[in-house]
Image 1: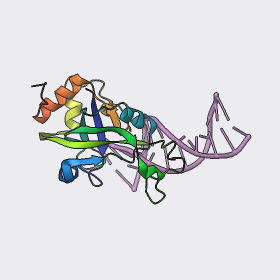
Image 2 (image 1 turned 90 degrees about the vertical axis):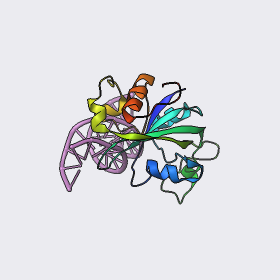
Image 3 (image 1 turned 45 degrees about the vertical axis):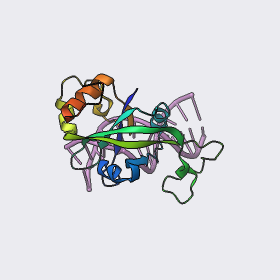
Image 4 (image 1 turned 135 degrees about the vertical axis):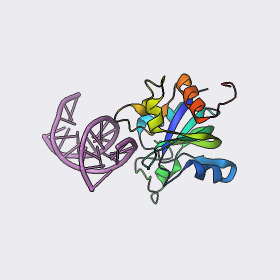
Length: 159
DNA sequence: GCCAACGTTGGC
DNA sequence: GCCAACGTTGGC
């Protein structure tokens, strides 16, 4: 079981949007960065991920989602009409991948970026690194537990 | 393979 | 809206 943090701009797609989706599930498409793609390819069904709101008045973690399908080709890359179109993507070499994510649990307490910076024990958390722009990053299990505790919710096995 | 120019991200 | 940081592109 691995832990992750995935960023989204809430104006475009928020944690609440995910909750309102049929089956609370959505393909996480449009990732066009190799490092983030590689992380997605190492995800396994059942992994847990923080939903991080970025580029908004209060950046931070709204809750937890579950990876419900491992990486498969992101077909939007092959769609000429898509904002995410990549002319180099083909059926033989899809180049870009996506996973499905499913809403898992809301944090009773939103964990803001400001709070993340204050919390002890989060040294090394990638999202706190200066200039970090990666939209998908791994989270250390110990960091995951600290943040969940702050959010007021713990996964089974961490209680 | 180097690196300057350019585009994007994301906090503030 | 600014700007630092960083990824990507493309000329050479």
